[in-house]
Image (cartoon, rainbow over all chains, first blue to last red; front, top):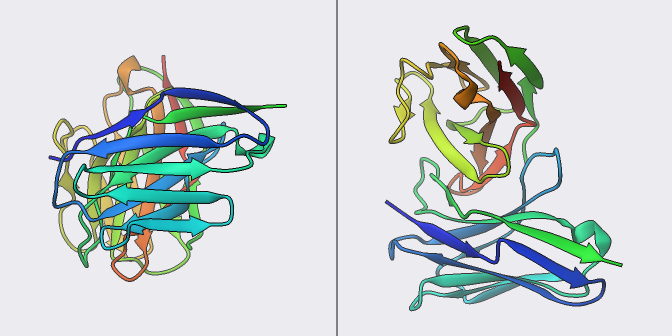
Length: 114
Length: 115
């Protein structure tokens, strides 16, 4: 089955700096890669996703890049703010019409310091 | 998106007992998923709940321990049976939305503590 590795496990940045979280996956058939943000005591929420036919996707301060050859993808957050502090999970799956079974990474605790 | 109501939000249970968690969605969905998130850990898929058929369980999870019902397209239950302290975790239901149901939306979770 799919295996997703995520690094780093913790990341501390100063407000206004950029943060980068990296993930690798094992199954070359995977073609859908979402990122979830989970604030303390809250449910995971989808913040951005990318499909394998796209190399990069941006949404305001967040962006995701995908390298299919190397089987890795990354989340980039620019101009970080205290409200970006949370645990971020990457995931990978193979899209099918019946729904996806996501395999999640181990999570990155991001702390944005004032 | 989807509005997913999950209850109970938390419970403290005695060893050997069972707890049923309910998940209600505001729209009809083909597939619902049940995840477990142990303290400080990632999300692990327990099973996929299909309406009108048996749930499909992931490796390490069995029906006798985690029976699932899916009586219609908006509702599912997960039962944690014969609980032990190792079952203490957050249990989350989720549904897929989007063109291929690829975007997962999660319920608010059930925090279970087993004494």
